[in-house]
Image (tube, rainbow, N blue to C red; front, side, top):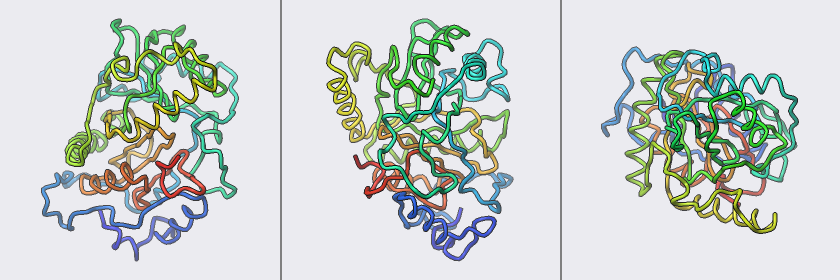
Length: 349
């Protein structure tokens, strides 16, 4: 992985220079930094674990713009770090049931409450708002369900930054989840909480799709945990039950709609400053040739997709993207709700 100064004179795939990429990000008001993506020398003398010699990554094609718009992305509890090649083909899985419901149910595309109010006027491929699509992206996650019933799943819903519990692993469960949480016109979720973390880091580890992702996720998971803790963060790889930190579920709020919305906003704002990270492994997101792949979700509603990430870049991702709310352009595959007119940071409200 090259430092930013090496990118200054390089070409991003089919003719996209770093300067051109930065200009595109500026045109749609994406806050970014021009510091080096890696904080260590090249070659590294700080002990960052390198990928194996045969770990080949596509450095030729244009990576920016490789993320297609979607409306919501869900991460289903499985307690695993690898899955069948096609997770929606796994018999009797919640992923398969949700896929079936999605293909048989009419959907609409109004904006979510998490979407920034200022709409961009210029289109840049790879930078999108959640209202730009009606697609639901389905992922399996490494987290275990928090339900006492092992047949009931815990589903994370982004960019809502909410978790739905007690979802039966059945077609009826998928229909209930769809009607209450995934159909794009819905903005309230049953049996739900705000995810009790300041960020969620998803690392693709789908070995049956590509072993590079499996290798990268293991090393990046350790590197993120170590670096975050050095920065004073608390790191979890399993979800703490939100009842202990967030109180009763959102459905039990007793105020008016405005009062409940203020309560939720206050919870989200408080979480953003608590420096608590959840790191999960996830199934295939596309673009395994750009391993390591990671997605960073924040309570503010942003979803940042990075590719070609190695342990050398983790320090900059933590200090710049997680703490400062700034995009690292050379690593960017794309992002949801990262266009922030009038804001200096993705963390601004």
